[in-house]
Each structure stands twice: as C-alpha cells, then as structure tokens.
Length: 262
Image (cartoon, rainbow, N blue to C red):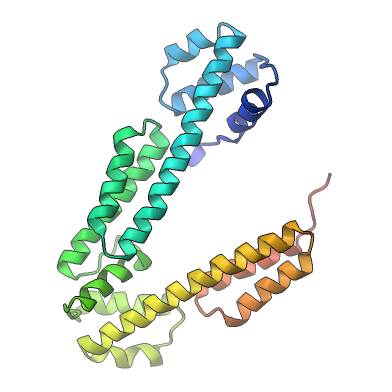
C-alpha cells in the first residue's frame, strides 16, 4: 500500500471543506475517497459507513482523517530529524527511543511502517557500534558516524575484507580517487583518518545542499530565475560528491524547464 499511497486528494478536500468552510458534496467520487482514506488512517469500515449517511457526519470524518495524516506526518518528521542528529552524535539508544515513542502513539499504518523501519535501522546501527563491523544492509552514510565515533573512543578499525570494501565504497561515494584512498588503507590509524575525511566531505556537501536549495528557492519565489540558476551553478562549481552533484544538476534542469500551461 505504501508505494501506491496518494493523500493529495484528501488533503485538497480537507483544505476546501475543513479550512475554508466549503460545503461537502457527497458524490460517488468523494464517498470512495473517504472510504479509502478511512482505512488508510486506521479507522474502521464501520466508521466510514456510519459517517457517510449524512453530510455533517461525513465532514467530521474528513476532519478526523486529515487530522491523523497531518499530526502523524509532523510527529514522524520531527522524530526522524532528531533521530538522525542523535545517530550522528553516537546516541543510538536515544534514536531508538524516539521511534519507540512514535510507535507508542501512532495509529496510521503508513507512518508506523516508516517508524518501524527507522527503529530496525537504528537497532542494526547499534550492532555496528558494538562490533565495529560494517553492515552491508545499511547505507554508507548511516554507518560512517557510528564507526567514526568508535575510532574517536579509541577503538581502531579492523581492516578485514569487509571493512576494506566498505571504506573503498565510502570513499568513492564522496568522489575520492583510488590514489587518495588506497594509501590510507595500509594501517588502522590512517584508515581511521580516512574515515574522518569521508565523513567531513559528506557533512560539507550536506551543508552546501541545504544552503544552495534554500537560496535557490528564495530567488525562484522572488521571480529571479537567473539568480536561482546561478546559485546552482556556483554549487556545481565546488561540489565533488557525486550524489550531490546529481542533485544540483537535476535542480538546474528543473529551473530550465518551461512553466506549466495556465
């Protein structure tokens, strides 16, 4: 269901009816939308059937559906941002606790699935922190601060085959060449320093991404499309991390697309 989930129609209806006070018209299409959305936010089919008998009760149902979507989204987004910060700081127990708190109150299945996946990820990261071994099922970016935190606590990297594969992949992810990477793999000390350099490149790239997209949006919204394009060109001029270069190129291409027809 998650891949097919489309809440924009119910959000649009909610804005019209709940926020702007327009009357709800119980057409066949609206009835189908409310019935489908009722299930998606964990209200029972009986709730939908009862509510759809009149416009006032259907309006109340719409309000409850949109409330669950809105509040669940805000709660999950806040928890995800905070959990990411905690993971980067090495507080994996805190990251797990945040997702457990979300799951303790969240009823919307879509949001629960996301929180459960985040909790599984944080739990696997705890195993990485305990063992010092990379997990092939987790992203490079998620594991970097965990392994770096271990190194900073005095636990040298164990340069087995799995770790060497991980470090080469991580270095390639931030645009480092083999000539830069291979000499650093000769000892745990130099490999630990390489790990720090890779993490630094990721953090610098993320900061550039946030700044460039924020400034681009401001310029675009002000009608200065050329200024917005220039912001992305300046980002591209210094960006070395491949995935962030692709993001810059995609944003630049989007700015060059013709506006939609009125």
